[in-house]
Length: 144
Image (cartoon, rainbow, N blue to C red):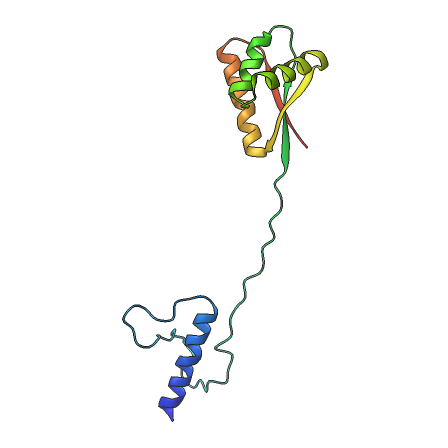
């Protein structure tokens, strides 16, 4: 009787392991090994020992997006702004010239929309590149 109860418990444990996605048997094992519990003595097999815990579903939220803006100044050459747009923001020559003219005429222009980390990185790269070339070019980011 005790052997039958033990076998029933092991079979139930094997099913619960399979239900949770765990491997029931290793290579070369004939029977699955039952997990050890402190309260194994006196278990009649009718308890909730075979219950599976369900993981809560995680809902992912879209990341916040940020606009990267170039600001106009009277000292930075237009060619330098075009070079920045082409090298850092990967814009084509014509696209970079359009954005540069928009910045020149309106005081600011959008270079792109990125996640926070990417936008922050691009702003720092623009500012560092401008400082190394002795230009006062300003670049900012704002939430979209």
